[in-house]
Image 1 (cartoon, rainbow, N blue to C red):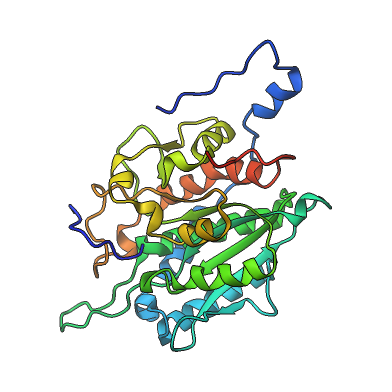
Image 2: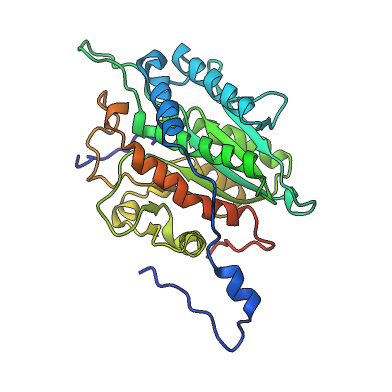
Amino acid sequence: MKKLYFLLPFVLLACKSNTTVSDKSSKEASKPIEITYKVQETEVSDFLKYLSSDELEGRETGTRGIEKAAVFLEDFLKKSNVKPYFKTYRDTLTNFKSPAFNIVGVIEGTDPVLKKEFLVLSAHYDHIGLEKKKQDDVVNNGANDDASGITAVAQMAKYFTETKSNKRSILVVFFAGEEKGLLGSKSLVQKLKAQDFNLYAQLNIEMIGVPMKRDYLAYITGFDKSNMAEKINQYTGKNTIGFLPKEAEYKLFYRSDNYSFYEAFKKPCQSISTFDFENFEFYHHVSDEFKLMDIPHITAFIQEFLPAVTKMADTPTEEITMK
């Protein structure tokens, strides 16, 4: 997550159908779909462990550490049969002094019409690199921020290539430069706008490495800006998304890569997180390490979101809209 310039202290109502106009088909459409695909905990663990390892030296944009991360992500997309969106997986940042790359893949939709619309699944793979002062541990591993989000997006991408359940096309994006001021997303949206990119919605995932002690799984940034939270809960049939007051207080909607897309396209572009300022005290700290990540929670998070992202990629009309 982009650096927060403040001191960190380390009702949703289900919409009832109008029975006078509802028919059997609309009731069927509103039911959560059953997902038989199972996210593998070992794959989640192995992926996250490498991405947050000391070998990657904190993945600061423009360094050899993030270059290793880029190669790792490219290899994963290739093995998962996610095609490059551009000529290669690498999208060069236009606003950073040294070579830096977003990693961008595409999963073409199965519907001849809907495949022209895109659902963006994204997270940032950069972090803040090595600590400048001399101490025993100098690697800011960024396990929660945001190797956890990258892990979730990667597993969702693999799910879609194996199930081919997306009628809309899916843009899979691993951003660089987020910690430098959302540079990766700012650079990419300029190119997409020039292509008349047909964006439906963006689901960006930020810091999901540990669970919250709340009656919902995660919160969404910009809760009131669209009906995305309501729709996700409808699609999962669970209290998946709730409102976190601190999100609004700290204006987190504007602090991650969703904002670059929202600003350019004025479509539902929001971030999902389980970091609630109470459950993790090592934000931008060398102790943000793999050993503190709750792998069963991350696996369950991804699994719970599969019905939601499937419906987002599958509905015949644009159900998620701005308010």
